[in-house]
Image 1 (cartoon, one colour):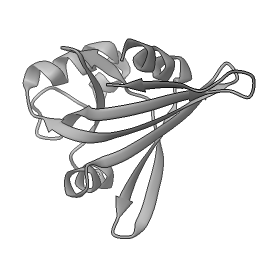
Image 2 (tube, helix red, strand yellow; image 1 turned 135 degrees about the vertical axis):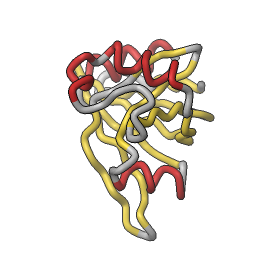
Image 3 (tube, helix red, strand yellow; image 1 turned 180 degrees about the vertical axis):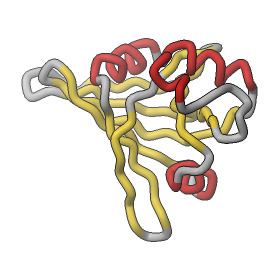
Image 4 (cartoon, one colour; image 1 turned 90 degrees about the vertical axis):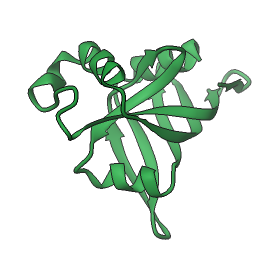
Length: 130
């Protein structure tokens, strides 16, 4: 899991895919946090991505860094604890102007039943389950 976290941090921006009905939805994300042995992402409750993950928690993530790319499939699970929100926002001070722990909008989701592949054109794919 630490390798997946480190790779996504290196990407800086990765792409998160959800579904809305039968339509895929993909958008750039930049938050990734390792907290209590789980990978976390952050968003706002008012955003469509939040409702999409609550309705269908199956998500996919893709990003690229140093000539390699990662594909992650997982289930996004809402964690309503203030501590998880605080940990995420401490890791991303730039978000603290828009989000505050327990403000009714800040949400963090941890990734459950995760499977990742780190791939390149020159090396065999590496598979990681978490």
